[in-house]
Length: 92
Length: 404
Image 1 (cartoon, each protein chain N blue to C red):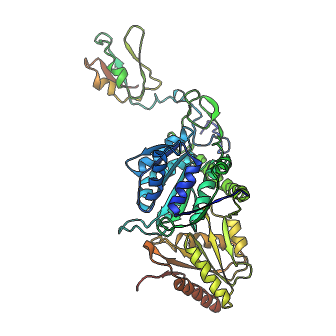
Image 2: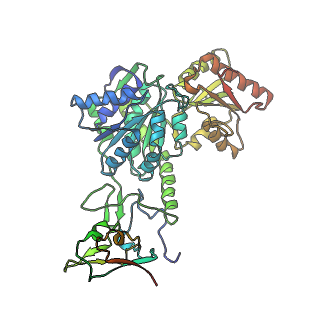
């Protein structure tokens, strides 16, 4: 444990989180990551709604984009994509 | 001391009436014998507009306590009541309520746990829940139920404590038996319980009162693994130690308005006692009757009534027992496969390190509501006197009142 964590006297009571979930990056959990083929994408946004982590955002141009800092590589987006434009590829 | 009103009510009604005077924001409960009168009575108060409480008619005890957790987290005063199997169904949430430090008050009309199904009194339900992190106060009579049902809020919400409290009353013996109960005027109760106070915590969005508020959001009790869980448990350990200090302060304050002074444990005839029983709940009234009889016969008998079982009043117990030579434990719950009943194990643990310690014997009695008659209790004192004469306990744990 390199990071010094606070002791029980310092921590807030009631098991209150001291950090927001946006500071807790889970992107390194996954074995695979989604890659979107923008040639085939129809901007339906299913992947955005289905992503259980809220890690797929909608860009200004209407296409979606994966935030790899939070993507756990579950593959739900690829499964749900109606035009199969998302491929799960092994991380190197 | 304020003028009081004498009421003829049973233990359940005493709990409901005290709670009505407190007027909590939320009551979520599911009826179960012998607690039913509490929720029936309380729902009448709600229907008649005598309280401002939001009454949540839930479909199970698990939901009842879950609703209270949500309400208390939002900053409300939340009350529930249950017994036996209802408490068993709440099990999961009892630990969550205490670890989230939510000052919920719950009345328990103590009843034997199924199976076989039995609706009568023993302490198997709350003794089974003794490690769930709740403060436990046990009552001897309906007066104590009324008084504890008021003090419980102050104890639970004390800024150094912040823990849920169980007010335990023996099923039927107290819950359904009418007694004289002295009650305080509404305004006196209102002043005593005041408004719920909040601790300040530093969450991810900054410092704020410990309650859910969209302006300054908080996350309570999320995933807490090897790196934080232990620290949060230490905080609960410390809260119980703080409760041991806070309870006598609140009891002293309550004595000023009511004239009734409560202690962590109540000794009776202990100054010169040569034999004593320690126990919990309504049985102690019968034990006091037997002590008086024995005293009139010249036997130096005494008793210790344990009012607060969690936190366990270790120092007070050692002091009260003093140089008593022999002590019997009244356990109204069996712990199968254990060295003895729950109270026995804890009392013995307390005295292991003491140079001066009594001979200690466990009497497991009254399971499933089996009667604890004066004769049965007299037999225990005789047993203890015999042990004292011999200088040792021959049978460490006796099951008394059971057919052989």
